[in-house]
Length: 146
Length: 318
View 1: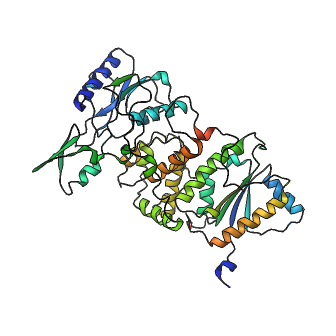
View 2: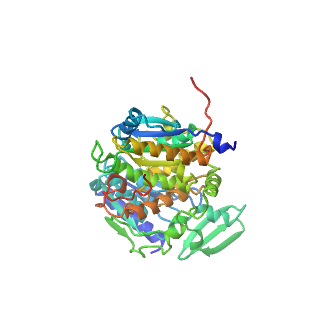
View 3: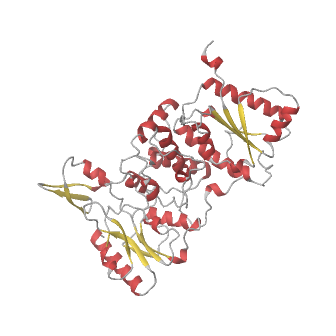
């Protein structure tokens, strides 16, 4: 088998507590099947996303990073996702500028009712990262600590 | 006005402000003990104001020294420095009423590394500016070269040579811009393929010794604890490993998003000659394209990353 078929990517997925995390939950109770490559991290709002988190995920061996939150206008904190949108736009452009493959860093808006969109997006993100192979961007092999 | 006349005028203004008690300190430049090394100088008394000077080698950004500084102060400021002062006022690090701006129209500042590179292996003992020329002398040589050749990279594409805010202007205003097209030189790696960009990025920053001189020289970097100094969690390792160097420079550049005035203090401070403006100028261009904002040009306009519009671009979001 070619390596692209045996390679299973690890994707750090940052989900807003109020929407995408709930969407993932609904996908689970609805028994929707999706690839097991994501490692979900719950954050209070996409406005909580610090660009440090994205780089840290890559440094610690993630092959892709996916950030997902509420649709614009639906933010539990009124406008956290609107501020995040501006930060993400600049950060994504910067990372692509220094050589990150565009598909490794993904953003989406998924509400807690959109279980099927969640399922579909996990599948798309996983397939896109899988096609790129293991990440070498910023990868640092840190010593194992207890 | 030549440099001597400007320096004389700065001294006069400084002495007047200090003797009348209008400010506690005048922050300007004094002549360095070696050529091309004029350094920041704090004059607290009218006598100390005699040491103030002015030349093309006044390279550090004096806005850096106003941050959270108690008392009233006067600052010698070119266009880019006043833009940083405006930014600091907007970010509540500085009060306008405590600040007296001694404005100087920038003729384009000079890069000492470029001058030294023109005389490899030779000891330069004196550099004088004479109109459009630079007279460089050393043991056994004296040459007159065009000043324009030795300007700092960012000065070629300067968009604001005159002070934005000013309480006393020294000399007269110059042409507002230097005439270079910033979009032509910003983001030089955009035309490369993704794989080449990563290699180019690594190559550009491979000499970084992580001394943080770029951070310390930057008037935007005033956090009490910088992300590189945080240890739990540790966002950025302390080594010169390429991943650590890359993390540091990406995040340093990102923290300047929507705030960087392209003053070039980072490159002027770098002992390794690293071109970190390759990153900051890219962000500057993006912010201008996405949100139509130029940092530090007015006291009213809100910084781009603390506001939003319902129709902000989001084509990259699924």
